[in-house]
Image (cartoon, rainbow, N blue to C red):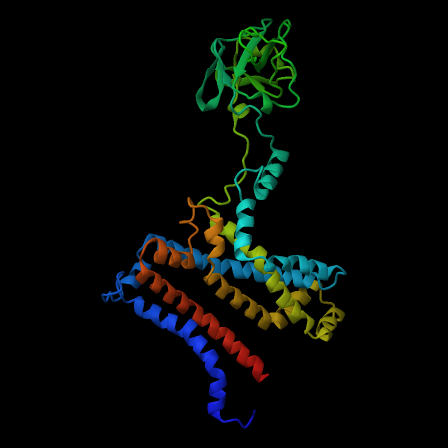
Length: 427
């Protein structure tokens, strides 16, 4: 249709132009006008709505978090995509690995948000992230098995500062000591716990028993004395203290019995607070402090595959002679990567980076779904704040101002992309 008249060309373009005007141009113009009106939409507000963008604490937090997203998420996703593309280029199973990395792109933001809301659950029995963290922590630092234990009635132990329990009077060598405790549920007792036994007296040594002084059933057992139905506290740490200094220490056996040397004669026995520390429950991934980095992690999980595929396409079109010549000249793989591969991939990397920057400016779904209500204010971003201002807070003027701000932030990035595309066409 080279010789077709311009009127015919416009006629063919008219449906697309109508859709473009209705779905893009009109909303932009309406938002621009609405951003200068008050909340009712009837009075002129001047720059009040724009002024509020930089004075309202919630919107300021959203701007800061959006800046973090733009600075971190695209860079990390692009870097991982570059690493994956380069490393999988030489392996047989590279295609399968790329498929695995790209698969999250087939999942919607909604589904990804639900998945990572569960991954970041605080309970390690439900959240995968904390299950891994707690498992690693407990490998190197064993958690206490007696977080709820405390002295019962007629116990010689008294509560001391810092969560310790200390005997009220000094102990004597040759006289067994009973250190009864209660408060540990039978189903959470250590697996190696054995029936409690009364300690035998040993000349010159301090012996004793620490155990769960509770037996189910009315009138069963003797208070303050180990019974066959009661269990010892294996691993319970006992320290002998004189003049504020620990002179001896030991841990209880499976049946709760323990033995201290003659140094403990005349000392106070202390059960340190470490025996009763709450078990490690992992990281508060969705807490106010690290909610934003955690959500960025879910975004990178989704979009690193996108970056990898585009960069891999760029790698496929790279002249191999340059790489081989550099290797023949004695360049290491790192030098080849840094001085040849990355510079040649620079146009592709810029396109990927700018595309992801535009994408994160309008991030909404992940933050809205993953961040719980208690920390959503701290993880807030501009797109989410736009939604909240328009529909939750009833401030359409402020929401329109946020929309214009997002447009102004996107335009320079779009200009970079268009400029690069024009350069590619000229080549």
